[in-house]
Amino acid sequence: MPRTSNNPAHNRRWAHWFAGCATFLLGAFGTPALYYSTLEPDALRLGLTCLFPLVLGTAFFLRTHQTARLALAGVSAAFAVWYVTDPPKNNRDWAGEYAVPASVSLEGRTVHLHHVRNFIYKTPSDYTARYYDADYALDDLSSVDLVTSYWAGESIAHVFLSFGFRDGRHVAMSIETRRQKKFPYSAIAGFFHHYELFYVVADERDLIGVRTDVRKERVYLYRLLLSPEARERLFKSYLQEVDHLSHTPEWYNTLTSNCTTGILTRAQASFRYRLDWRILLSGYTASLAYKLGLLDTHLDFRTLHDRSRIQRPEGATPGPDYSTQIRQTLPLETDPSSNR
Image (cartoon, rainbow, N blue to C red; front, side, top):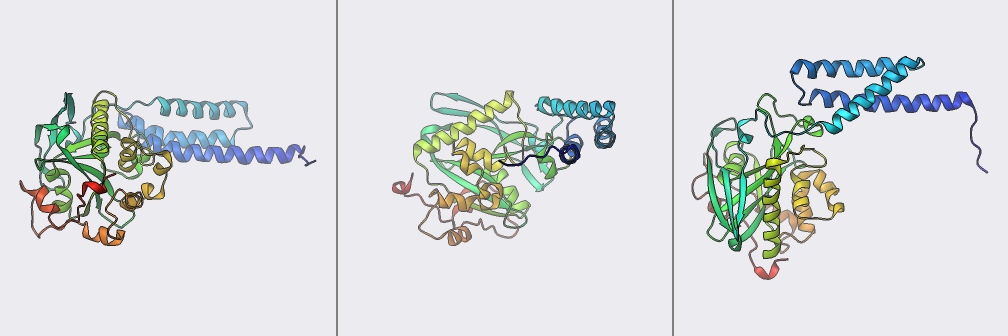
């Protein structure tokens, strides 16, 4: 029979260690959660950010007193209740790129998209805001392209889709953070309740063009090999989420609800793929799609990757033929027999 310890001192040490770890983890998560929260006014947000770890630490070190133990339990419970019930909203003072969400309506086999974004950029932060409305026939949906855009190394990229139609038009859809005007962008903030989830619905001249011609990022475009039924199902899933978020906002989360996990959710991919390291390290998303047979496998992936980079002339700006121009040199598989 295994022996169990009945030594009160030993048990107290384990309880002390466990309480210390729990308090540290709560402080390590709660302090930035308060700092990056949307609490207003800012004085309240910053004050609670300073007060929270102070109260936790004081209560922990004085926890031999009944009042301190109650304070520690009360503060922990109050934070948990606040965080779980903290509501996302649609009525904030948004940064210009996210101020006007798209809206969608479906009439038979025709999709009506309103407020398709089509900004004209001078610099990444200096732009002329423009939008247009457009109708798309579901029967004319002919392609889905995977776009990956890199601004630093190889591990992290922004990933989004672009839907093509037989008349040559494309509508790009990107799952992003909806940032308030008063906050600068922060990668850390995405782990907490700081950004709402936002689906950018835009012209390729905007969504891809700002990355290739203005920000000078490395942008790759791959043709996804999907059956017509799968293309339509994916497109309609995006449209349903655009409509859903217009009246039911949700929080963005860097780990669980981001640009790559959102694509897999819309594609109804199995849960195990959502935890694949190539999803967490989004720069490798295209290699996962290749492994799953969703990209052209006539070439090895390294060759396909190199040839799929969008090449733009020096000083180019996105014009009316931008979508055609960026695809002229790309290895886009279009053989219907290879669709899945």
